Length: 284
Length: 344
View 1: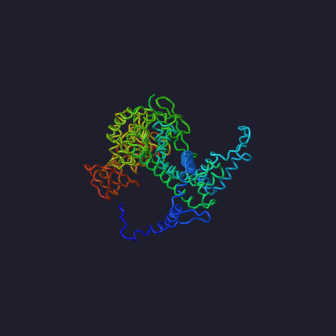
View 2: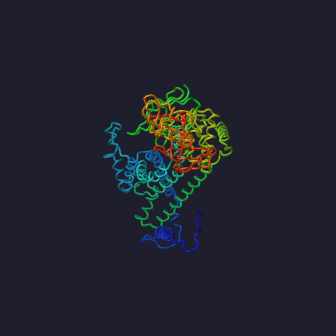
View 3: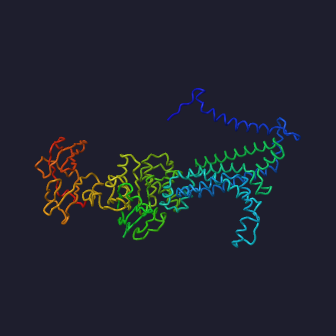
């Protein structure tokens, strides 16, 4: 069916509402943030309108470079962990009985209802020396004495993966349910073991979905600022933590805005690179 | 012995028995069609041969070796699925080469075999096309080529032609049969289409509610059905009650001489194909009836006759067009040799 291009101004009518919402809730705040990032900080008050590059210049230091690098590394690691765990899990879930599927999905959805603060403190208790999971291992004679597992990079990674995993599963689930189950059966009749058929048929057939999920979890993890503070040492703090710190505790709105804008630009760049690389891979 | 042997195969899904005590021997190089209405267990039986389902009890033997518990990927099969199940992320050539790649065959050899198979299915030069760009018939051929890439011991096809339109389906049936004869490969096809089964098979296995009702050559199935289900399922037939009283049989209110009724059988059913019911002038035949409808299809003429409270259909060819009209009284001539006596 060929659709006719809109002729009159009123033909664009259905777009007015979403366009309005986007302008009010996205374009205006983002433009404000960009504008503020060029303002001058007023140490005695808030900021004064201006057009200076000081905020960006200050950001271009080894310290912030390292934080940015760590933030990206953490987000990429969380995304990879989530996808590596979620793809096989969701695949098995999609092949399970209807009842089992519903129970798991309800459980996963209930994780989404937990706030980041609760997740953070729950994990910090689980990783603590006095009440943590190492006590269980001591009871089972696997370890000699209980140790504290946080603050550490592992603790931050675990909690962030835990938080992002339900989203990952929910994004992968529809694609895996739609995947024709006879594809893996066909692979098996052609001589592939079940594991081989998973890696040669299921994963490649879901390539685009997996890439999209990686990007989604990556962006989701990039915004996390509570878990690194609760479960990590200062060197595990992400750029989001520093942005919060500057904006709320140091009252340095222009610098916080500059960092946020920079983070958005880097993120967009990385996503664009991934998409381009994905297209190239498809053409090959 | 060489070939496939199924011994007392039973498959239960919970309380439901999908396949009941199936015994079947498929000699090496033969073409067998599993034919039956939907839900008769034919697909389940094939899935057990493929190893995709495990039988609840019984044994499956291939060339004398018990393969009942051998996993699918070690059975050296080729299977064509109803949905075809071509891998959407691979090209035509990669799809066909999949089983070779999995077995670690070298790239050069893979390419050689793919070209060979593409030539066999008349799709030379299609190796680099994406599967999505092919027509239904072409995909069908690719699925067949993919299944045959390793020269499997068994070639299984589950309703392979059901997605094609009628004309293409008939052409593919002939092509598939010729291919099978050229390769001499043991082949099992699941179908609900009796024309398909009659066209292709050496042996037609008629199944109903999990049981094999008859396994025989197509003509035998048609001419000598084993029971009323087979007689009714394969082609058109007239199933007529009869009573026997030692001397002869009473059919449709008249005595038909010459029917070979097994001793002791007091009543039963005779199956007589419509083309074996001959219309004559009333009085020239033992059975008399009234014409109720004439369906002239050009190629054949079906005459519906009511006799003894039952409806009987007679089919005639155009060169023997019966000169009858609705309401006319006619005689029905049945040749005893054409009648199959069945238990009711």
